[in-house]
Image 1 (cartoon, each protein chain N blue to C red):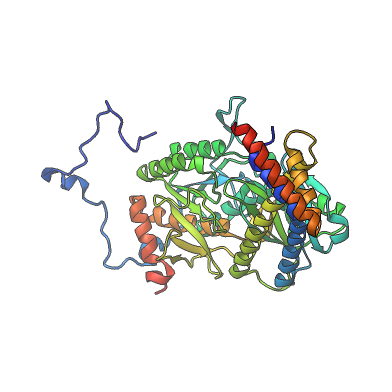
Image 2: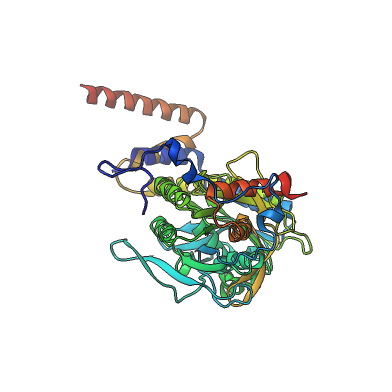
Amino acid sequence: MTDESELRAAVASGVVGSTESFRALLGAIVQVARAIFGAKASSILLLDEEADELVFEAVVGEGEESLLGTRFPADHGIAGWVLATRTPLVIEDVEQDPRHARDVAEGTGYVPKGIMAAPLLTEESALGVLSVLDRPEQSLFSLQEMELLGLFANQAAIAVDLLQKARRAERVLADEDDLSVVARLAASVNALEDDRRTAGLRLLENLAATLGRSSAG
Amino acid sequence: MDDVVGHAGETLPAWSLPKDEVERISLPMEWPDRVTREWAWGESTGKGVRVCILDSGVEAGHPLVGSLESAVAITVDEDDHPVVSEDTEGDVSGHGTACAGIVRAVAPDCSISSVRVLGQGFKGSGNVLLAGLRHAVEQGYDLINMSLSTTKKPFAAILHELADSAYFRRTVLVASAHNMPVESYPWKFSSVISVGSHEETDPLAFFYNPSPPVEFFARGVNVDVAWSGGRSLTVSGNSFATPHVTAICALILAKHPELTPFQLKNVLYLTATNVGGGK
């Protein structure tokens, strides 16, 4: 049986149609991060727990075309370290860092020299990593930038949390079993216009009232 | 391990001071009218002080680190019980080597040991972290550098107890504050010395923070550090501020081995750049 909270989320998702909005929000976050830091690229990686892989969910700048959707093992690279230790890290001369897993970077067509990365944290878990690559050369890193990076990472963590909930909700919507029919019904009625929508809602209200009476009796 | 709180049936000393025992606890040293850096660590090289780096391992023989007193790795067996074994892999990331190199640069003659709590692929767990810290406390190191923290609340209570145990056994735990505004441990416990970053380039510049929980700020931005593979890198983060304070503590303890953790923290305060150390 579908969990009640998932069903509610599914109904909400049917009404709001949210995954695309949340993906767009992630895209906007990396765009702003890249612009504020004057960096060559910025990306958000999400942890796929089942596969133990990190997936590029949003990319802007260098590698934008090729990276989106690509995956690599979650225990590789600077992103893997940041995810595992749940701590931000800023490194210059990345090429010298064994954590960078150069093969991964080259496979994606872009090898950065400098990277700043922060984990996307919720209360109990790390959802992914925000990276900002190649800030302007000759500019020394500052604590203000570290704080900014943390703020962007927190914002991204909220957006990722919403995206993942919406995806779970969509899976429930697509499910043929149990009460997911309610979610699909809500989505269908919501898609109607004007009088038909009003009539659809009235029908549902009457149905709910009838079912409520029969179950009470 | 010493219990912080005695259990029923144990013989506990009376937590009081009879009149004829006052002489017994007289302090073994004269304190100057004003504690200066010269008094605190002038001419000290950290010789005789044992420092433990609880981290990703340390690359022994790195030109900026030198030799290690010992190196162990903490893992868990099939039943999730921690196992302590000799570490033959060294540093799985470079992070621990960076911390060790910073300590070595400031306190060149101290002894450095490594307790590795992260495995290949940076895999670690709360259990491994706790076992590593417990092992380090049991070894009686003078200082434990912990540039790691955990955000997992279930481990907080045990970590707190371990941190207090260390404190009463005269093992000073120097811990990194998290770089982001999240709850993590053990740096927030008052029995440890917690460290955040400042932006200055002097490795001996450190500031007392009158608005805790972070108690001290040390150099942690654009730091040139040792890295695995005999290399060096430029890094930023509280992880790298922490070993600066660990090393300064090593200098102080080498010159004043009788100091308790409480007294050591006082000396740090009195010699901080924004207190008395800038003069």
